[in-house]
Image 1 (cartoon, rainbow, N blue to C red):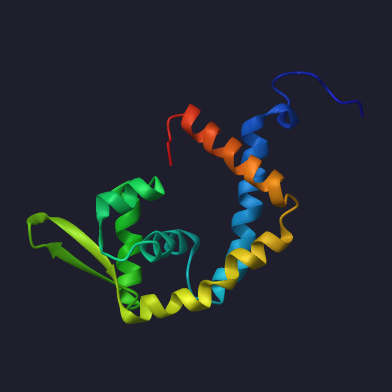
Image 2: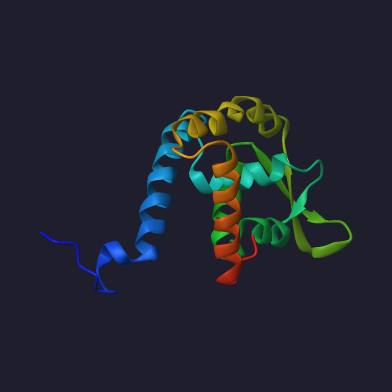
Length: 148
């Protein structure tokens, strides 16, 4: 079979190449995250909370992750049920919900430390090429309206 140059061929679609790569990476993360008892969206929420020393508003967290509150709320509810986060009203603005880590949530960070290293070991791009790829992916996201 010869390679086609049709712009509609699946193999010529950037979106499909990104989808396949993203799906494969998320599957690899799933294997690691199962050991922590986290789903991928829960892991992303925990990463955002681990990088700050204070509670975040649901809107702030959603902005960091590029998720709307309708998607984020069930993720946070399950993390709260597991005792990893606590959701409370902001004392300065009753309409705002703040999400903070519990002691168990902070402790889970130590167990999660190996996840990026394990994934990076499988990644076919290393060193300067990795940083270039990250910059290119950020530029793609920004070009399509997602600055995060």
